[in-house]
Amino acid sequence: MGSCCPVCRADAGERLLGAGNVPIMMHRLHATAEAARKAARGTLDLLRCHSCGLVWNAAFDPERLRYDASYENSQAHSPAFLDHMRARADAILKAIPRGEDLDCLEVGCGQGEFLDCVVERAGGRLRHAEGFDPAFRRQPGKTSTYEIHKAQFDGHTAGLLVNPPNVVVTRHTIEHVADPVGFLASIREALGPRSRALMCVETPDVDWILENNAVHDFFYEHCCIFTSAALAIALQRAGFEGAAVDRVFGRQYLWATARAGAGRERPLPAAAARPVAHTDLKNGFVQFWTEQVRAARERGPVALWGAGAKGGTFALLVDAAGELIDHAIDINPGKQGHYLPGSGLPVVSPGASATRRPATVFVMNPVYLDEIGKVASAAGIQADLIPVN
Ligand SMILES: [Zn+2]
Image 1: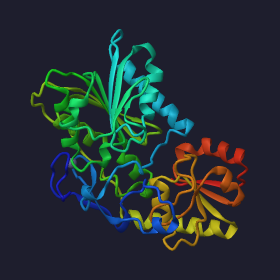
Image 2 (image 1 turned 90 degrees about the vertical axis):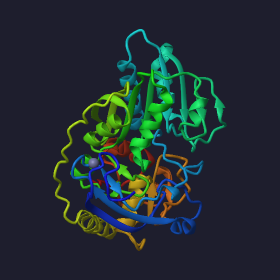
Image 3 (image 1 turned 180 degrees about the vertical axis):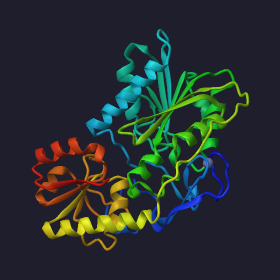
């Protein structure tokens, strides 16, 4: 991606963190531990823009990623995450004028979990909904309530759109894109010059990651991690107007809204990246958490809760030799019975974890701590739960 900020074009970002030999796809499932350990690797060379605060991976190569049906990152099995998605669907409905029906397009819709929420919350206000995602697994074509195209949304596939949307939403997608302004601009262009559709973007907030020292939140697939200023600038440069950015989901995510604009040049929003103390960010994290995991191992088997990118990255950072952590727990049945890329840790259900008798469970995302406490005790896991934050 190079050393020039892909959002505001400021030159030469400052070096934030580097790591060689990281798995390039943290959400790709592996059927055996051996295949998981042989997962393709790449380099993290994270730079931070001194102007807008964007963090990007200068060593990122989009050609190496392939989002297909073996990609599994659904969080919709968590009640807390479902509540979050419902709240976002409600926010969309609140943002369109009373009396106006909803024509919703989702770019990067995964398996349609968010569109399910939109359909549920919109009720009679829903006129039409459709989504695009190359990783969609069910049979393409019309479902009873919405339509999903198994394709990347761009200038070529925009012709598949059945209805001109008045709301476009893209959640947890833009951080995977090497040219985020080009990505948003291609959506703006596909809407047509007369569109004033509402654009909604949800993506991780790099300020939350840095404030919470969540180093296990930096991984290859997320090549651009935004500040609110960077996201507003990206939207404006792509032809969307009046960007407003909220922090949602325990402040972990940014939620931006903007209108498809008429294409007039406007001054860019002011940007001033907050200074962060990140001396030895990665080494500090590795040292602290390796000590915690090592001490926990003295007390009995150690597990991780959360077999997503955070869990996979945490295992590699604190237990590179694979000697300390016994297994990872995940409530997503699509992940259970598989192995984490790089470390080869087995991913099991809460019930299967209980039979392995972990004494300590490190919880990858503190936002789920209450929910995990309930699921763990219902499954018979008698372990100390330690949030990683
Ligand atoms: Zn920048």
